[in-house]
Image (cartoon, rainbow, N blue to C red; front, side):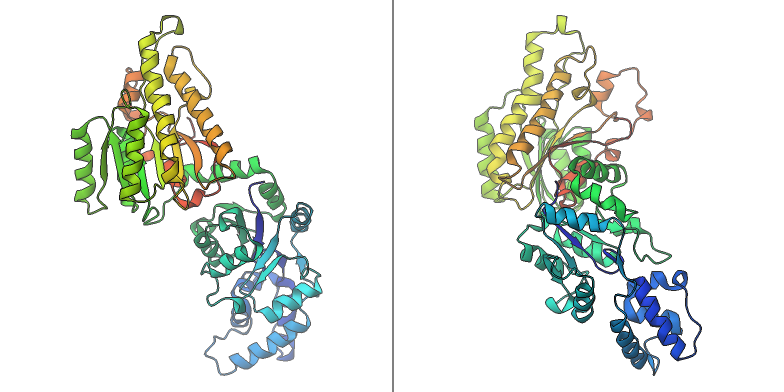
Length: 479
């Protein structure tokens, strides 16, 4: 299972409370000889609480002279009828039962006042089942501030990155994201008519509560659903990588250059690494002239680098920055496209040195500074021929198979001992010099530019992917 704690918003997420809100409102409207309301007319207003319901039903705003009195009377009626028709959404009782069976804490983080929350949960016999209940009275700042969710994680003794939070309002997702949790936008909830739920930046959107169980309790499906949403339409937030230190090998190539520029634009301090000092200096100047954080140049030719070189680099990073947040192993050598029968030993050594051995040793040496990051990410550039081999791709394909293996082994070994995440990205067919070398007859104008394929790298470098490790992503629908 991907998560160690499950947290819910209350109204419109865990519980369908709208029927009792509407029942109470109609009782009040009857008293004032006002027209009654239907569920279709007012259900979406439930997300705005009692004030939103009163505004909708009585067609007055909070400045009306009778607004406070009507609100007081409405809340009294609601308190008395709080659990007449309210139920757990279909499918979520199964989630609660599974959490309890597997000893996974579940809880509620709501902006509903404690008086009504506790009364409702006691009526439904949920009060003693929940491991934690956080209401506005428990914190200085309510949602969308992360404080309520951070407190909930503390109470259940689970790191925020191991929690999932489910909510049906923008403030829920903002709070969960800020707390560093995986967030689920509950499309079954009380969404207002003009809401574009995609704009909330939830990790995943689930349309039916019945689907929550599979997402939470089936790890492979969880990852598949997260990946389906992420790579192609990911929109990085401004300053997404602020205060992060990111080292990118192959920085002077197409994808490496595009990624270095984008990381710098998003606030990272980038350590640019490549063979050509002239090209590194040119990239340095491009970043510097934009007024971005000054990059650090690390010249390296992986054909000749040894473990000692990477150990020196590690000490330099530790002295300069104290940590490393991201490592992108992007440098690659294509080698000869020929049959294995005719493949030269010298070329085999060179390709495996650049694509495998140097990347392995660099990662190994940098582990100590990666461990000093709160959320370190190691990303290897992979290839489709590293998943399904093709004739005549020789050592390049072999090296990319080792890349996929490295990711899985590193991730498995570090799963419970560090916060470092290990993943691979297959950028697919891209307008680069290596692609032109492999496919000289291909029209490069038919291919996406490097800038178009780097979003999965950005995603994996960010806190948005804090629960993702040991996976291999594609940058394009057709890898």
